[in-house]
Image 1 (cartoon, rainbow, N blue to C red):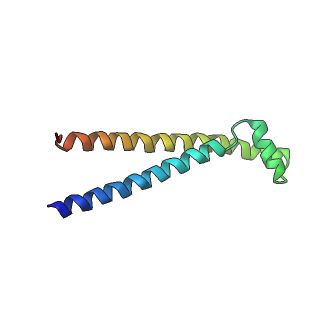
Image 2: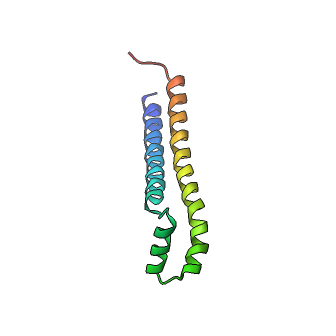
Image 3: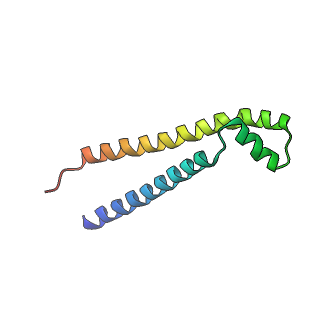
Length: 94
């Protein structure tokens, strides 16, 4: 019985680390993406793209940033709900 609990705890810790890594990655990508049109144009001009290209790419980057932020929020909500349900199903130890 003790080995079974140990294996479960190890799997939960590994899953928690993976979820933390995903959440951290999504948060960093959201923070690093340029959000204002001038910042997008400046970043693209550094890469040698013209203003016309900046407008086209800028129109796709803003929704991508919003999707990344929503994905990070979704991961956090999933982890919170999962932890809440796990706490409800496990008996309280005194």
